[in-house]
Image (cartoon, rainbow, N blue to C red; front, top):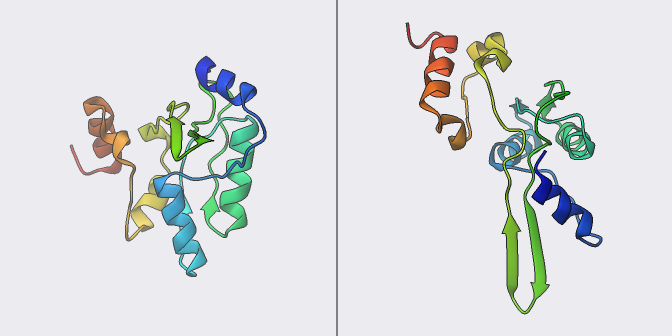
Length: 138
């Protein structure tokens, strides 16, 4: 759990919670245009994970990934606008790791376009495992 994120969330007043993320936002756009957007993302079985799961499905994108029952909380971005044109953003990563064993390889093979968030390639070991798991490396 990211204690700073939880502390900021608890201390903040009423706000607007909106699900998102670059890949999620792209899948929403594809779904709203009538396309077959499908999202694989890791969320936790917490309040924000439930909101995200509901929101992404409500716009018509396919989201079938089961919520994690352990590990970090669902990733979040907290933007605060205190006035006078200023704003503050806090982005703890939270639960975001995509491991090769999390992938539904039949879905990946059927996909014409595969769009991955850049930070998933931060770890050379994760990159090698994803390549190997997908069959693109020996």
